[in-house]
Length: 258
Image (cartoon, rainbow, N blue to C red; front, top):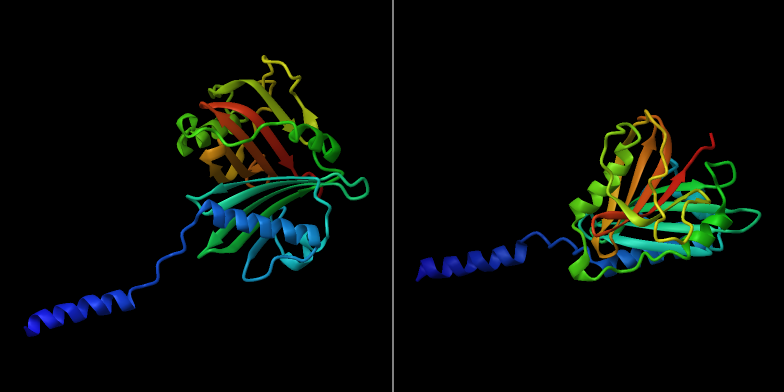
């Protein structure tokens, strides 16, 4: 009898004093985070809390970064990595006086935003043209892919990596799709034809390194923050839309200003 009571007490105490369950990282939770981010950026009232903040590859204080400016956002698109508990958001501000194209990766810990990395491009950056970016990106379809047609995380990441590896190794086999369009700054390769290709050449001898990934299988997308041209290279984002293992869209953001 005593043994049975002891067993019951142990089971109850284990249930009561067990470590709390980690917050489930759902798409709804991540969407709430990106909504909060967009409100902060559009209002000029930065996110609060204990947040590691990096802007253009430099550790900064979020209250004095780009979020301190109230921006009229003309376009935004986010997706959600429930595996890494991370998000990626593309923002376009086509204001003629203060135009911006911004890419932001966020990571959550225990249900709260804990890390924000943002690339802020404007006049003077590589091929920058916010009006052009707005025009082209708003006409592309980055929508949800039917479950039966989705690629795995591994396939999506491999496609993006293959494209990036091509800059250093021209023998890399890249899964080019057709049609495919590349939006680089405000420069666009797409002509609206079924034969449009992203295989239009890339520079040689460049290591695209320090890659950080946000992957969302539901939309076949991966965003990769990296350094363009080695460990001290330019802060850069390459974003890909993958359909049936093939690259369909490429967006790049490169910070060129010193």
